[in-house]
Image 1 (cartoon, rainbow, N blue to C red):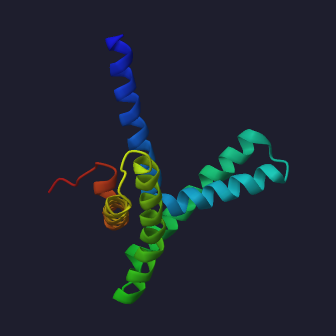
Image 2 (image 1 turned 135 degrees about the horizontal axis):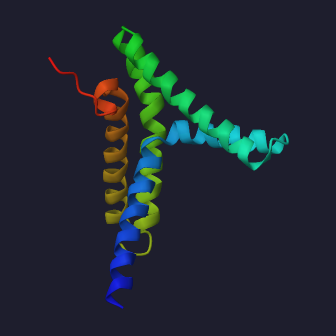
Length: 143
C-alpha cells in the first residue's frame, strides 16, 4: 500500500514536470502538433505524422533561437522573445488554473496563483530562449 502511494506521488511529480516543460515550449509544441494533425489528415499515417510534428516543432524552436541570437536591434529581439514567451505564459496560466480549479475555493487566490504560474512559465521560457547553446546542452566551454 505504501509503495502504491509513493508511486502515485512520483507519478504526479513526473506529470507536473512534463506539463511544465510542455508549457514552456508551448509555441513550438503547438506548431508541431498542428503540423502532425495536418500530415495525419492528408494520409501520412501515425508514424509519419509524428515525425512531421517532431520536425516542425524542432524547426520552430530552432528558428526562434536563431532569430533571437542573430537579430541585433533590441526591439526585434523583444518581439521574438514575446512571440515565444506569451504562449508559454498563457499555457502556464491554464496549467495552474487546471490544477487549482478544485483545490482552491477562493476565486481571487486562484487568479493570483494562476498569474504567478503564468509569470513563472513565461520567464522560464524567456530564459530558455536566451540561454546560450552550450549552456542548453550542458557542454560548457573550457578556457
